[in-house]
Length: 421
Ligand code: SF4
Image (cartoon, rainbow, N blue to C red; front, side, top):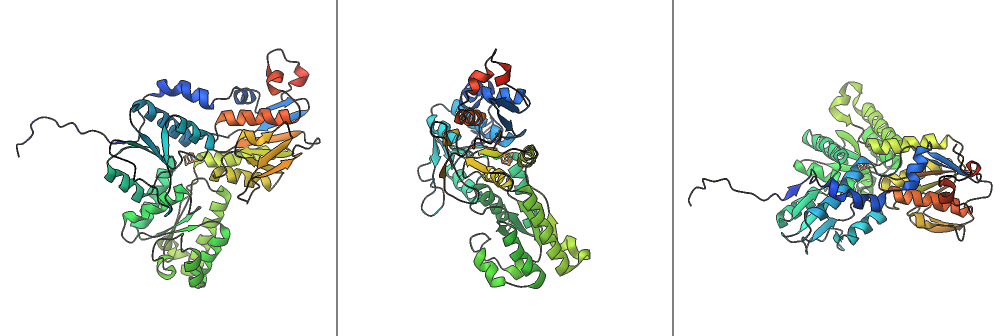
């Protein structure tokens, strides 16, 4: 075969740094997600009062840096490849409004088959595939690379940091104990990172109750069978408590409740210390808080909001959004809380709200949710909720009281109807 003496052009098939088309998509992003109401409420110090009803907005809410980037990158991808079929592995983020917008742009969501795996059978080398903000498993990445499609990877940098941490645990012979939901895309992708090493292991614990089972075994060797049974779907294949809980490294899904993640790490550390002694702790235990700063900021902001004597809180965000569910759980411990998937769940005409009560999986409708005595409503939104849905929710809450926010905020509206707290 003759030697090639000229540079060979290799077509790039993997992108993860954007296409530099922000200027071209900015108008569409503004049309699809911007909210003048939110801008106005922010400008007024995150609180607005109309007709005796005050709405306080958490000072950190809605789209995080990772979601901003992923959504922008998806819009850029449509612009960059106008004639190509574009697929998205699952949902770009957990918000139905955003996913519907992408579908309207001709970006097709790849669903899971009955086996639970993503069905890539109709993806070809001529296609473009967008990987979501929470990433995909190493196995799915390998399957897509084998197909040869162009991959646009929007995995958030904070998720990549967790992957690095978990990979280092596996490399050094520590089992990654991940505080997360094992069915969640991000946690599946994170757990799969241990497969970079032949002896890599993981275990996913959902909450403190599950962490205590792990601690009981570490400390006293109790409950091996229960552990195997309980974590059959949430641990690496062939998980053996005696072998795999000798050395553990703690990580977490980026969107978990920060206080719970820290408490779980402390509990496991305590158990390892009891078992091996403080002097040997470093040989048996590693920990790194991998809650992302955006999740932490939203949880901190909602806790500050709750200090302001709010009567009721409305949390806006996808029912399958982990960080939104945790915001709702934080609020529900203190005040009546309504987690709505979309602003349309608030129906002023009937005075009802459709919401998912904390800890349940089902939406339910409640009439008369905004009691006449309620004077302050707190509002927050998960990291995957666009501002227009937050603004719409605020308007609908006022409308439930028969108050017209747009009229009250209009230039020249009477000050008494437009007080800023
Ligand atoms: S919630 Fe955190 S990890 Fe997830 S996309 Fe946003 S910034 Fe990234």
